[in-house]
Image (tube, rainbow, N blue to C red; front, top):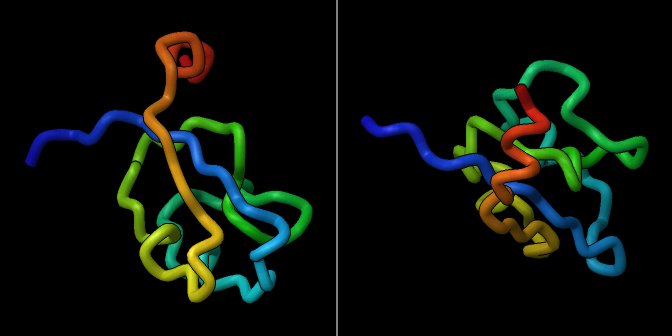
Length: 75
């Protein structure tokens, strides 16, 4: 299975109910979270499984492909 390109997540804070479902399904190591107990935002996700976006009960999580600069900063 080919590796997916890294993505950057965005959380709509007006819609987010801070239920923690996104963290519960995230396979990333501890620390890929915000102080608000959601998945990290503005940080490239190299796993890009999209489980957090799919499980969000209020569809507050969206994503975009990470830029080359963001990917380079990961290294």
